[in-house]
Image (tube, rainbow, N blue to C red):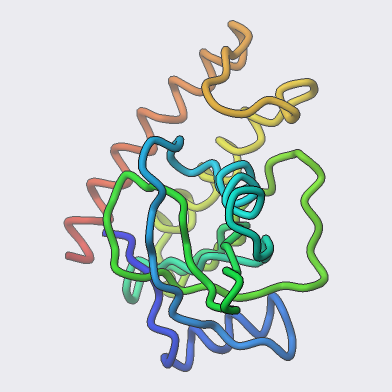
Length: 181
C-alpha cells in the first residue's frame, strides 16, 4: 500500500533534498472539499483561494511503499488566511495528513508533471513497475493529450499499448505485494 511518507525518516529527508534543496517535508492536514473532483489539486485549490483568500502553494506530495519505493507527486495545497497549509483535494483514499514538500521554484503551466520515483530495493520487478509508471504517464501526455485533464480518450494505437502495459502493471503489483507485504 502506498502511504504518505514519514517526514522524519532519513531516506525521506534525503529524497526530498534531491528534489528541493533547502526545504523540509511537512505533515499537512487534510480537509478535502466535498463535491470537488479527485486529484485535481490546481483547480480545487484555486477555487478555495478565490472563495476564502489565502494562496496556492506548489510542491510535492511524498508517498512511499515502505521499504520498496518512494515517489513525489507534483501537488498544490492551500495556505489559508491564517497561514496554515491544508490539503483540500479529495482523494480515493483517506489520510489524516499528507507529506508535502514546498517548492517555491516550481511552476504549473497547465500540463501534467510526471512523478519522481526512486526504488529503495534492488528488485527487477520494482524497477520495471516504476518504468511502467513512467511510460503510462508518457502515453497519457503524448502530443495534444498533454493539455487535457480528467478522463482522456486515447487513440487506438496508444490504447492498445496502455492495455498491454496495465496487464503487466497489475501482474507486477501483485508480485511486489506478495514479496513486500
